[in-house]
Length: 355
Ligand SMILES: *Cc1c(COP(=O)(O)O)cnc(C)c1O
Image (cartoon, rainbow, N blue to C red; front, side, top):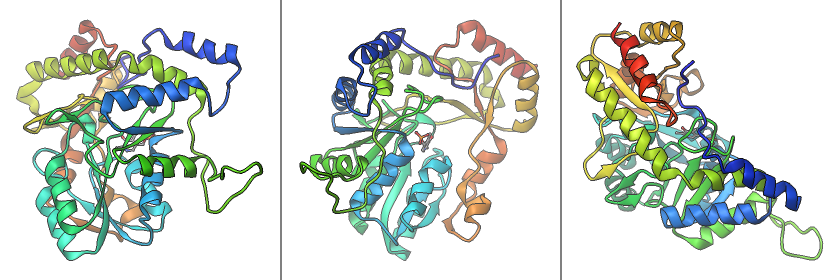
């Protein structure tokens, strides 16, 4: 079986987990948490906080910024993890469609910012590629909205050589099992503003005050990553450049061989994505048929995201639309993109699709 994007260990992870066991720090504190956060900080050039997953990272971002009972604009072409935290704080999501780059449409975003009293924008760097983040930041500044970058899929992606996730007030990365790197489950919250990360850190460990006894002044959460999982993360961060390089190679091989079938996900000018998943929008083929045929050949593929504005959960929500994300859902497919795929595996996928 060739899977969509399976975990790809460096080989060092087990050794680090063993060290955790030897020290008996099987806890949400310990040296690997510090090390993992430090590695992320050096890599993206921002302050970092390791958490149980990326969904909780978005929740903390909204909480720290005080975005509650408000309107939040968010990419409609995304995974539900971008949107659920908006609801946790009793906010109203306003969905923004994609443009030809598959990323958030700037004109629709500006229209929404003009018409609605939007307190925060959550922009998704979809499938590991950079959104038009500089322009989006400009619009957020112009209309006085906070900016949170959902870079769950886009660790290592860059815009003008700066890592995505570090343009906004907050950025988040996911270390879930199918992402570029994994800690089995995990997430990281980043910000250029150290005081914001300090606040988030406080809330992430039950908002326990620094007293000799248990003292609490506000509502907290139990969102901290464990030392065991951080040890896996350290092993993963050591090989991030190799992983991105391989993902980008896989994409190029698909594109070279299958370009006549449709359009592969673009890369916007001045950016470099991590090509987490290689995705194509077919001209004529029906992606469900292709997916089922691939499955018969022991190859896993996946339909592109069903836009949030089409989900039953959001049938009453406002959306600024142009039809692009709906078209991507109806015509698009994610191909197997594991960084541990061999050239022969890639050829097997290509041959199966051609057949
Ligand atoms: C995976 C993902 C999330 C959620 O990440 P978890 O670590 O699983 O909570 C959020 N947004 C996007 C775009 C994702 O792909």
